[in-house]
Image (cartoon, rainbow, N blue to C red):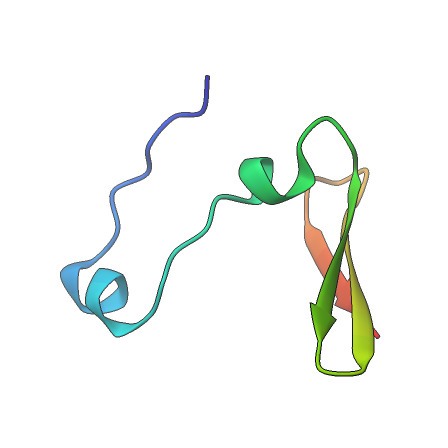
Length: 53
């Protein structure tokens, strides 16, 4: 179960908000396709997110 983090009202209204847990699932890596490019979203050992092309 993922804890809901309260977002500032301005952030919540400016763009969609997606949970990193939902994107990664049980993995530490997810791939995001944009047009003809594929990006890698990785959860580091330090618990940070890293997005690379």
